[in-house]
Image (cartoon, rainbow, N blue to C red; front, side, top):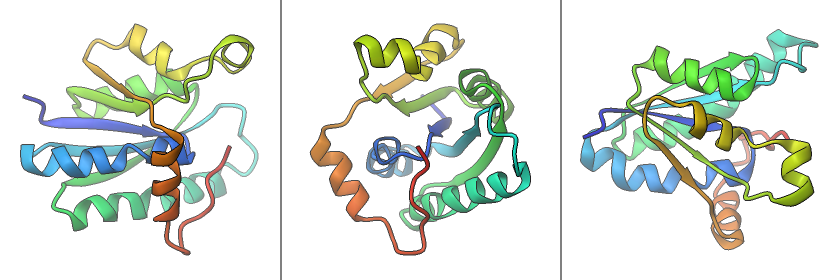
Length: 153
C-alpha cells in the first residue's frame, strides 16, 4: 500500500478539486501527503515573492488536510513542471504521484502541452490522474476562504 503521495498543484480550481479525494482516502489509509507547487522556469522575475506566494497558496490546503487527520507537508520547486514534479516525488520519498488533468485536447493540448501526460510517461512510480466535472470544480472553488489567494493561471 502507498505510504507517501505527492500531490501537484498548478494553482487552478481544477487542481484543488483533488483535495476531497485525499481527505477521503489518505487519513484512513495513513498516507502522508506532500503538496507541491512548481513555479515554471519562465517566471524568474521576483522569484522570492513568487515562492512566498506559492507557499501561502499551499498552506491552507495543507491545513485543511491536517484538520481532517491527514499528515501533510508542502514543497515549492522551480523549473520545468513535469521534471520538478518527478524530482519532488523522489525527494519526498513518494510512492504515488497524484494530480488532476485539465482534459485539454486538440490545439489547446498542442499549444499548452500536458504536464500530466509528461509525468505519466516519465514516472517510475504509479501516477493517479483525476479529471473533475465542472460542478466538482465549482463546489471546491466555493469552499475557498477569503484569505486564500486567487489561483494563478
